Amino acid sequence: MTQAIEANFDGLVGPTHNYSGLSFGNVASLNNVARPSNPKAAAKQGLTKMKALADMGLVQGVLPPHERPHIPTLRSLGFLGSDAQILADAAKQAPKLLAAVSSASCMWTANAATVSPSGDTKDGRVHFTPANLVNKFHRSIEHTTTSAILKATFNDSKHFAHHPALPSVDHFGDEGAANHTRFCRDYGEQGIEFFVYGTSAFNAAAPRPQKFPARHTLEASQAVARNHGLNPDKVVYAQQNPDAIDAGVFHNDVIAVGNGNVHFYHQDAFLDTLRMREDLLRAWGEQDKPFYLVEVPRDAVAISDCVQSYLFNSQLVQRADGNMTLVVPAEVKENSNVWNYLSHLLQGDTPIKDVKVFDLKQSMSNGGGPACLRLRVALTQEELAAVNPSSLMSDTLFKTLNQWVDKHYRDELHEADLADPQLLMESRRALDELTQILQLGSIYDFQK
Image (tube, rainbow, N blue to C red; front, top):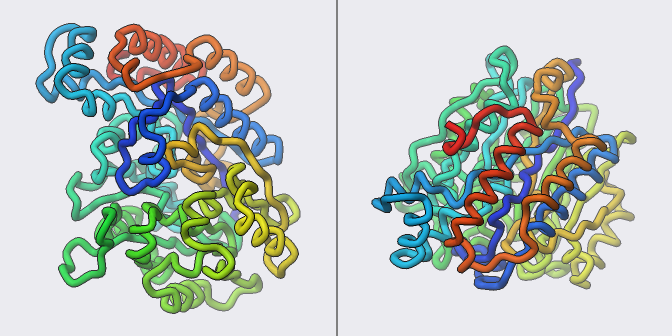
């Protein structure tokens, strides 16, 4: 058996982190529109979580933020002149467009890509497909830079295969790993890749939500599975419950999380729960390790509790003893229904035996919890050795990045500040220095 681990690569919150309410269907994003943000606190909260997981013995990586405001996008949309002139004109003529190209949403790297480990793929390499995120303009401009970052971080064609994003049309709407989970007995063995979708784009009769958009399509998941060379017998597709999407469950990771031999999900997460369970158990087959389907009943925890607390937008990580820890945001402890349920869960017959609580208020206010902030990558020891070592969390990197944040980030940011040319200059200086810290090379437009 090939020995392998699961690494988490978290997105570092960018200097332009703000609350502009850009994500229709994301209740927290809409509820906190126009509030001032604290980019410095946001970045430090994320770093604290990264360091804590590294201290637990897990492999933890760091992915940098994107250049924001993204001047090349504004230029492509007809704004001309100097950078300062472009910002001034955009603020006057199209302030919501300026907010969109200034979003720090790339911090949520669960949406960065879909990753298939080498144990699952036909050619025995780790495959990456950056998500096109076509449903939201502010996210649809991310995949080019995301691809550059992933290639710089996983830069060895012997071990890593990088695909382009799927066509940027609704029919192939791809939200990345937020709608993808991998189950396995051991990380180095062939596992089950579980793709969750909002609707089928080419099937007019397919169920759809009525209030909020179904961001991810079956066709996108099928295309990724083909491109990654996955074994069809080890791929399972399941549709989100449209009513759950309309209740604010914009991604599957808002209402389900899985790892190893555990699938932890809400009773109302899927359109056909029985079929989902049967398909996963069939793909799991006869193994010497049981597969745990941990279903949270609606009578104990309502969907509204899930959306408010982000219970399922948690990280389910494997400990050295084989049991699992659930990494949750502080909002979970503040919701009595959710906290009571978790207290009983820890006493139950599942591998989930511990809960760790983190303050991620800045990210949560924009609708992103612990699971949103990380991209999972299962790696063999040889593959891990091929990863850019400067991207991996350590005591030294944690100290360096905190000092970098203190040097470059603001304590408060309002939407009106996005038009400030000084903010753009501050952000570029910060990112230029960060690429040197992480030894990524020239990955940004302004560096070329």
